[in-house]
Image 1 (cartoon, rainbow, N blue to C red):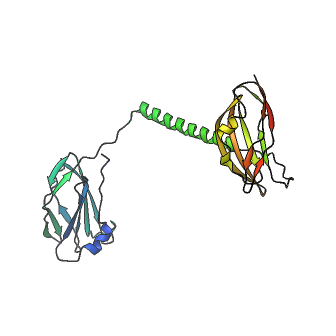
Image 2: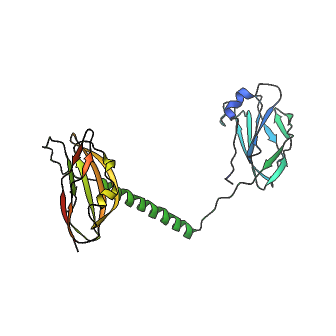
Image 3: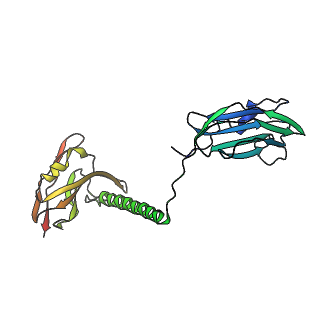
Length: 271
């Protein structure tokens, strides 16, 4: 069960509209019995409250008291509101006793004929110093791991264009970020274009079918703006499996109005 705190359904500042001025003090009991939340009692008397005797059994209930003036503040000598907040020390059903109020040497009774259900708040777990250090280390390790993953994804999506800015003709370019890679090394196969194309039409399987000397670990899509030029990318993070020359045949890719083939590309995998 979550820690239970006082929930005031009616704010002290709204009680001005709830209570009307009378020659007798008024009170409101605020409670959520069925959710077992801590309850509160607000007493108001515009003539001023000198003191209140409220014989709560403090072995069962912890009491917090606040005295406020007509503006909902505690700076004025004349107190108009008394706010009581109760927290159960044990699980209990309790009958609230009546209270006695004094104002200008005159006594007034605050009758309370209410049974309330209270549940003791669940205590927070206190970790030992060693456990606290372990928890802090785990949080830091998780943070570092998340940073590494984010940095890895950032580097994978970072692509330096191979299409010259002096070329006005639209086309598709197939290339790898390394011309020579070693077995188990990771490298990037990129399909780049200065026009938009159907990036989903080339799957991981399509790239893996180009050669059995590597496998695809992951794939991504990117669009990069550079000095007014817009470049579209479909990239694949691959791992080299076997040595030898690799020749990737042209891939046919759908654009907005037609299909265009890429160039072929060669690279080498060494031991």
